[in-house]
Length: 343
Ligand SMILES: [Zn+2]
Image 1: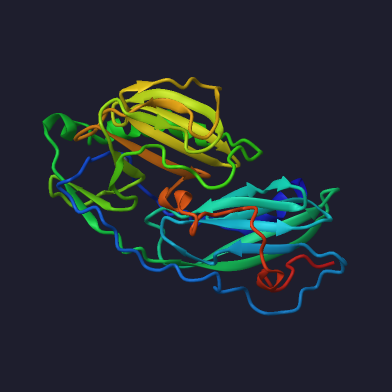
Image 2: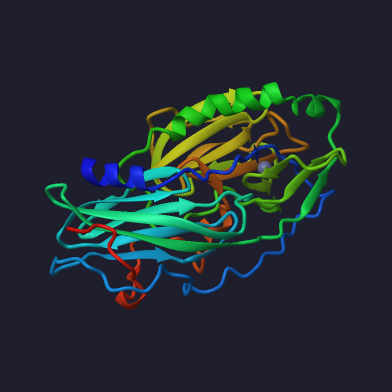
């Protein structure tokens, strides 16, 4: 692993755009909440330059990136099928990520935040054999498409407006960001997620938030479910409770570590039943809907975070869009192009 990691770190730069995620919430019937999205297209996307691979190995691992055309805010799968492989990793957007292993499948879910600039983005996958000897390294491009987020105007009263203070925002980020840096090296989640609330979705991910008609500074980083105060919040999939806490901006919150860099967060709760370190199953009762923190009414703000990037949770509860890391992929769609490792 160390060898493969070294190669990737040398080869890749850091293109991470600055981003501001808005965790705050409007229970917004005063706002437009539908989001027009651009069709992210099929899995057929751009691939690296066509050239014969130069590996001398008989069983060359197959590398998949699915889909290769990814809308702002979407998650996608990087997978390697390598019966003879021992380690695999991906370098993307300034991050270096080790893939999880289950049998001969190595995988990770990657995600784009809502403000990722549209256009091509490079991604490099490296595979090493069981002894750590680099086997294959390939670069490809994904194509980021523009989601054309709408602007949502939210009117806040004085006490909520006070919570827009950047100091309060920074305090909120500081409470949770360290949690995302500790990733469990195994998958706790199993299949598609369930919605964590039976409430109706009142605000979508990605909408640009204009508070009190000011220029938008933030995007909405999750899904809002409008629900009665005290209604149940349920774990959307299995995991381990990684954080229970409170910030002035988000109120009472819970973070579940679903493994492999996938987390989900639940905010503005009136009551929390989960405790840090608790193992939860899908559907388990973890808290109650409330209006703590910046909130115009009782609702649940649900976030999905992939390797520190807040992504659109809707994709995780829709069978059609779910980024399934265990799906079977057609070998004909494996990443082609030169093996960047030469003997
Ligand atoms: Zn929200």
